[in-house]
Length: 353
Ligand code: SF4
Image 1 (cartoon, rainbow, N blue to C red):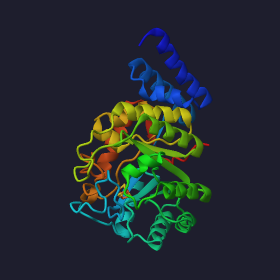
Image 2 (image 1 turned 90 degrees about the vertical axis):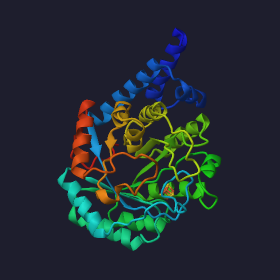
Image 3 (image 1 turned 120 degrees about the horizontal axis):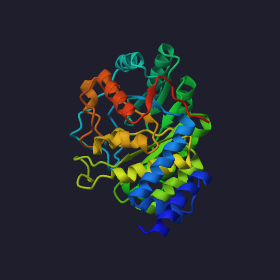
Image 4 (image 1 turned 45 degrees about the vertical axis):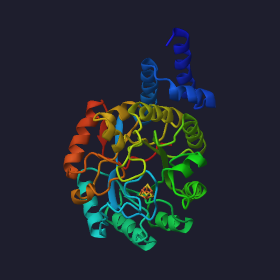
């Protein structure tokens, strides 16, 4: 890149950090500029902002994938309803509690109950799970990631003690959403759910895939505008990775470069956001999670599900860490984080407002 263009690109990063805003055209430029010096500068500013807000701390989330049944048919997902090859399972309440026991002893203070939209998991069952976890471990946070429900259900879960809710918006562009999802799924309802969660008082997480089929840079600019307006406490960003049993099996995966760039831009846009360095990022690059931390992420989410079910929760192909015991996962993760100069802390890891 010539000198003038380069300095004006770097100036965009400074302005994004200072104003937490750019024009749509400028966001477009930031997302498409692949100059190495530019990418390094963007990541360095994101790291500086992350360290100003969260220091060198990295928060742990213990992921418990408690059901892989799903009534939905998202086109990109390996556990979609119509995938007859998926081996289905549900963890019992006892198994979920046992995963929490293991996690608590290893220093986890947040448990993420994640699953498909499984009609078997009635509101009563979810309330019971939350209540039991909170009774046994009152100093932990419970995060739900169980998809779209109605406001009354979200309210019941919150009243039972759930603290946070993850619901990726997937894309802020309605036409793109309708490309990725079957007609029975509604963009409007998904956005409505996010607003209800916010009103109830949850710490809310949304997010999108980098490089999903049909995604254009314009869609990502819309995502950034949505995040800027909605101000989620958490933003999950991982690369799209195809699953062999979906119609997108032969689509190219999202890139490490775009994922890292989005993490950095979101860190500058929302300095206090909790941003995970995702398993998907670690799947497309053996050093992906470290790179994510170096680009502004401050959360890691090791898997606490029992090893015998891990390889059945496959949203995409070649998912890493499906064979390890939780203790092994956390040892590996701790070493990875320390190599970046950061450190995992024993903490609920709440949003810093
Ligand atoms: S992405 Fe979620 S809601 Fe969609 S099919 Fe997969 S598990 Fe179900």
